Length: 88
Image (cartoon, rainbow, N blue to C red; front, top):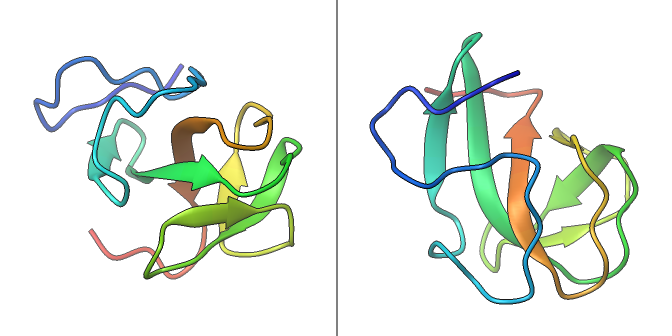
């Protein structure tokens, strides 16, 4: 299981919430050379590839450069892993 390695406390990459626990757009470096970003789902999002709007940090179910390890209900907050174009 991937975990935060940059010292950020309280990160659970598969947890989904109805209230924000971090600022939208907050990034965390994870084990296994991963980069995660905190987002809000603008619609229901299945596990797998998804798209993050780089200015609003809203998540959609369209195939893109991030991966949702756990599904999101519309309006939920959580973490997605950057899978292409990674800059750490």
